[in-house]
View 1: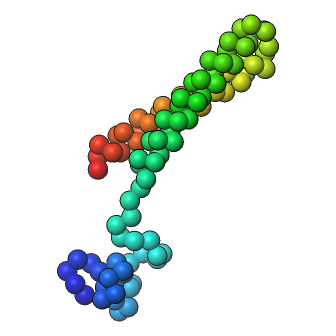
View 2 (view 1 turned 30 degrees about the vertical axis):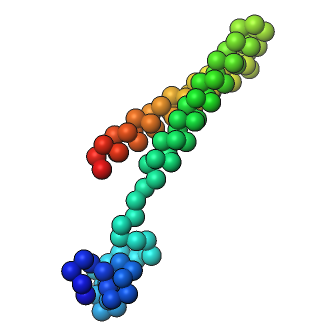
Length: 96
């Protein structure tokens, strides 16, 4: 076994005689999360949800539809969740 924790095959797994202490599964030892992609998707969701909430609010104000106010509220809630996710992603990126 080499000093970097990899077996002779170089796949990150120990040699067969040392498998007892390693967790099951085939995931690599250097797995990384896709925080960048998550931030992009949350940013898109935030922008789209805010725009939809504004449009639904304008239509509801003009027509007075109760269902349209509900749609505006749901879009606003999605925008809040996306903003919270962006905060979590930023915090995790700082701790890397």
